[in-house]
Structure formats: structure tokens, C-alpha cells
Length: 259
Image 1: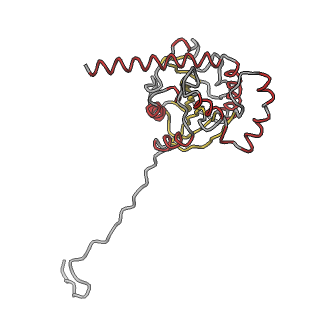
Image 2 (image 1 turned 90 degrees about the vertical axis):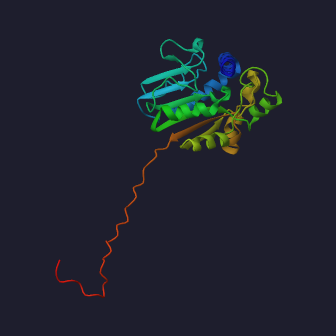
Image 3 (image 1 turned 30 degrees about the horizontal axis):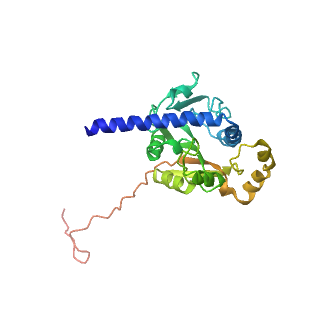
């Protein structure tokens, strides 16, 4: 009975996650989502172009637009829990907490707002650690709870549609989780310092906040990009402490003349 109940609960959770991911795709197709997506494309262009390897996977699909086109890695795959949100060209159905990827086989993993809509973010990061090769990189896009977006998220009491129904993770907590798994944070930058408004005229007039925010209050951006590198566990050789064999005959005693 307990096992059946756990299965039904897990199925309900996966269905809710799938529904939230589908709603997030619809939100990104809206005006505010398009503005954020364009900013995130620019941020990713500066990062992905400097990450090399043979395989890159994106866990979670935000829109029909390809946000990986700036990468020099030729083999790119999108893994999503919502089969309807995957393109036929490079899509793969799979759960973020149980990736259908071989261990130690991927060079770069992109998590575009994946952790906010997963009920087991630690397991997602463990899966990332499993599939990444040593010295591989994980790129995380997240919503910042310490920003005007985070204030709006709090005032709405974390209700409503995406992204407000998600669980915003602070960069400090995320860095702690990654450090426990053996990752080193190599880059952290914030973006989109304007409030989450839908009015085009007001958003254009508030464009100066982007320049001021990056210079004067960079930690208060509405979203952030974090890049972490998988640390290689090196074995430190231990030098044996060789000691000369102790003699059975004292140094001050005469030694025998015959062997």
C-alpha cells in the first residue's frame, strides 16, 4: 500500500512539474517573457562560446527558439519532461532528476530555470554531476529572490502562473549546493534590472536601469547566470617513510668477525 501511494504521489508531482514547464513556455512566448529571453540569449552568447567539448545538453526547454546556437559544440541535445515542448530535430524526453544520459559523457549542461520548477533540485544537481565529465561545466539560469522580481514573487505569495509559482533559489544557496558536490563557481552575473512589467513604453523608459544595475547594484538583477566547473578529485601520493632496519647489535659493542 505504501509503495502504491508513493507511486501515485510521484505521478502527481511529475504531472504538476510537466504542467508548470508547459505554462512557463507559454509565459516566455508573451511580451515580458520575450524581453527576458532576448536578454538571456545575449548572456549565454558570451558564455557558451568559451565552453568547449563534444556534447552539450540543455535540461528544460523555454521556447521554440534555439538558445544554444552560439555554442561551438556540434552535438547539442535538449532534454525535457514535457514531450510536447521538444522539437523533433534535437529533442529527447527525460526527467531532470533521472537523465537518460550515460555517466561521465557530457561536457556542458545548461539548466535554464530548471531548478525553480523541480521538487528535488538536489537530485537534479546530482544527475548533472553524474553525467558531466571531469572539468565539465554546468550553466544555470535562475530567478533572483533578492530583486524586484523576487519582491513581486513574494507579494504574490508565490501563487499564480509561471514564473511566480516557481521556487526562486538564491545564489548563495546554489553555490553551497554545488560546493558540496565538488563544483567550483567560476562565473556569476546578474541581468534584467527592470521590474517585471508588461507595458512596452514604461519598459523602454526604464532601460537605463540595465546600465546602472550592472555597475552599481549587480547582485539585485531579476535573474542570474551561474557557471560552475566540476572539480577533479586528484590523488595525493603519500611518500613512504623508509626507516633503516634496526641493528640487533648495539653500536658500542664489538661486532662478530664471522657471518
